[in-house]
Image (cartoon, rainbow, N blue to C red; front, side, top):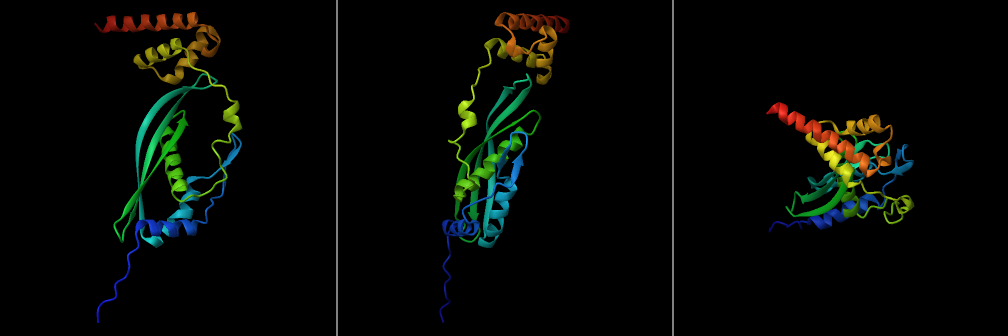
Length: 214
């Protein structure tokens, strides 16, 4: 008797089964008490997806790359880091060896060293949400808080002062304290001429250090 051949399903057919099992919706089960909003944590997405991935013989391998890193001054004068990453989520079918890649972006902001991890978590989570068409109740275009927000651009004098501060090897979070101690006001309330005076002070310290080293 000829052996009965079993049809091998591809990665797309198996991903369809994952979509069916997930049910098309993920509950917002976490709460950000500081900014007062509910959100879908990464763990909720993985609990939805992981069991069916294993059942279908699918493996998911994320690869991250940093697209940008920026310093973001806060209202109180502190400096936080804003990081944007790209996630390439490679979904591989262990049976047919077929694969597909889902690309997603994520951003994270933190005052310490967690900005990259936050950005990776967001990118990884949204890669799954978009790949499986999972609804969360969110609509990025319907954001009244952002629509009402007025953004201000950092003056060039402050950017120059921040650059000099970093060249001196000083911690970025100490700069607002230095400005406050000199003028008894945060840098956002200083005139360009006042910021220029601070630039000149740092320049003098920089030249003194160079002369001492020479």
